Length: 77
Image 1 (cartoon, rainbow, N blue to C red):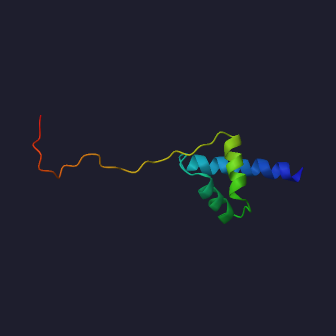
Image 2: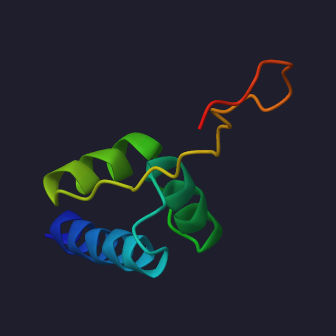
Image 3: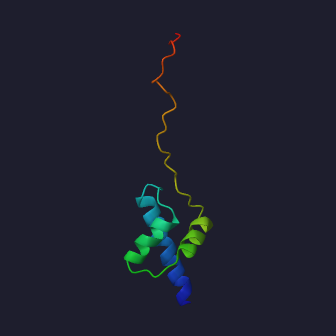
């Protein structure tokens, strides 16, 4: 019985951290936060909890310049 209670509490903590991060943190960062807060948990466990609860982090794409304005070609309007 002890493990079921722990799993429920752990799942609640994972969901709380995930929501507080505006759904941006993935399992590595959530694992690090949980370990800092006294939970002894592996990344694999956090990954499993996240997938069971359909929690997927948002990926933020870096800016990529697609226009090369440093050229000697004429500009056609």
